[in-house]
Picture 1: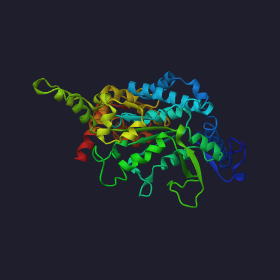
Picture 2: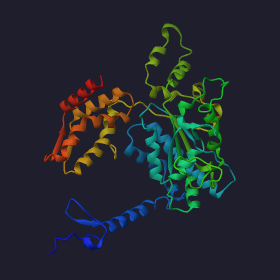
Picture 3: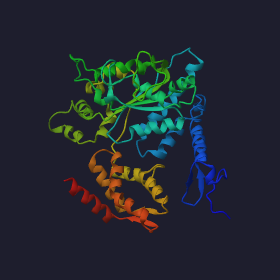
Picture 4: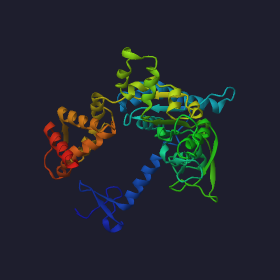
Length: 416
């Protein structure tokens, strides 16, 4: 029997192919078959969007969306219920608009307020993936009014268009774009300077809010048919029209300082020794946000016209220690499960003791950035282990409380 490398897929020998790739199991695959496999996977990936049908979403009820979110996001029951209902109503409205114009149904655009790292963006990523619709995220701090340095507001549509497969016909990409979801984060960073009208031109704050009005309400915008990576337009570029009437817009932010406005309003009638203003001041932002009103957002710096186009308001709560621990271990895409999968690729089992998990959570909460701090802390703890383990013959890696304390304590001394 010949020991000459033979492609496991096409059966050709090494002298008949451009190159041969060897696997860890001592099998081979030629470069031609690699290219064919890549093309096949690419085609399969692109099938999800052409298959999208607005009528198919009618079979997905709010409870179905809620249950799916529950598999990936810990807590935030109020926000998950609000999102599930808003998404269901929005695509019901889109379906109705395509078949009838008797009564015009308004859009279900939403504004979300909650502490940093509590899951605002993640919730919408999961929803969009579940429904199979294009999803785009934009940062409000990079947006400016048209004609100024920075991203035009219409560039959020360019990014959504780019999320559709470039192998599809232009009309199909346009159709998908017009039924997508756009999440604009850090909206609180473009609040106008004070509650009164600014006497100077605020092109990155109030100016952006004004520019967003037409997109949120529903208008036709021209975007480049073949956008460059930066998404910028030029006079000779071919454009296509995108109608934003059926695009679901969601804006979110941490709204740091909004809790003071809410506290001042809710405790304004309580004076003297009987006042519980000091107690309210100690409430966490997530709890206070539940009492937010449109007027509170306006006082914070959001223009009334923009708030009028964001009829649905929902808030997210602070994550406590129990929530953070569950986030590490319970969801389908839990961080610990991700690392355990990576260790399994090397034939090893990763075990993290409960007290070690507690130490990781405590350090993450000290950073004050919510769930997004967890990955950084876990990376610190596993840094040396991930370096040594591929060369180790050990089949089980156990992370103890002592190991966590030594690693995080050492890193703090270095940082100091």
